[in-house]
Image (cartoon, rainbow, N blue to C red; front, side, top):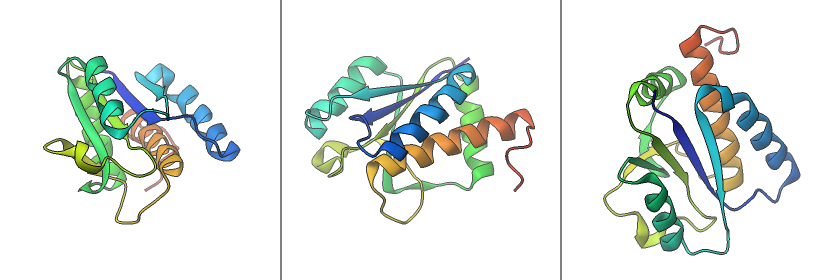
Length: 144
């Protein structure tokens, strides 16, 4: 079963966001999803280099406003494929100022056309991952 690793640039400073990240991380632990918080002192380039070192040539996908958009059902399908894969899928939320020039030629997905603060993006991504696992499992959380 492929694991999903969510990479965050720093620990959320906003206490509400931090609590939500912690809550969804705990809910997802048994679903093969892990959250890694990297130092927010590193540059975007060094952050991505850290991610790639840990990913060891496995799938790395950046969250970008211009990436591929999904509705909850199609995102759940993607999550299902990632979980069936033999490799880990690494989802990377950028630093506050984005990835800059460090983002060339990588797969991207988007949480929607709106620009949002990176801590909020982490909450939205984790909630959607949780929603996807309940869609896959047939649970009552998603009532789309």
